[in-house]
Amino acid sequence: MMTIEQMMSVHKKNAATAFDLADKALAGVEKLAELNLQTAKTLLAETAEHTQAMLSVKDMQDLVALHNAMLQPLGEKVAAYNRHLYDIATGVSAEFTKVAEAQAAESHKQFLAALDSAVKNAPQGTEPAVAAVKQAVSTAAAAMESVQKAVKQASELAEANLKAMVSTASTVTKAPRATKAGA
Image (tube, rainbow, N blue to C red; front, side, top):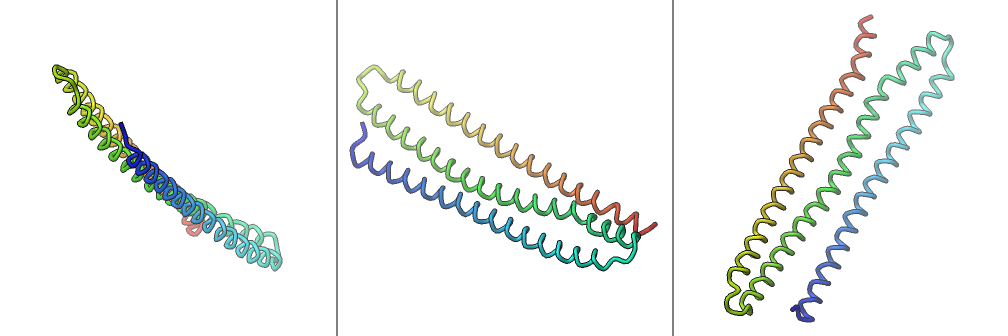
């Protein structure tokens, strides 16, 4: 059974963890707001520049050329925005994962300490049952570790696939420019 001091210690740790996670989440929101604000400023400046350029167009051919020049870098800009967005999300996710892993390790350690304490106070003849419980705990911990490794590998694979997709998208958006310049 836990003492009042132990329970208070656990609650203090949980409160500190909750506030730490809230700070990390808020930092992620702040980065997202900065990204969106910078994107809006850039978009406004580019729109003003393009509007001025369109107002100075003399014929339809110049208008089409200006329009094409405006649209070509759009794919790269969208890909860059999405890369920044992804970096923010993965950064916050990594911070949350670290905290969750630390919490799981601490909980496992506390459970084993409680189990050892219970074993010391167990009546004679319960050794086989205690050994079975310890084995089950070890097996569960190993299974949890395997799941965590699999999730980490899946996340790394998804990140690699996303980077490859963004790279391909950037290459595809650059290709029309090269062909038009050659024409």
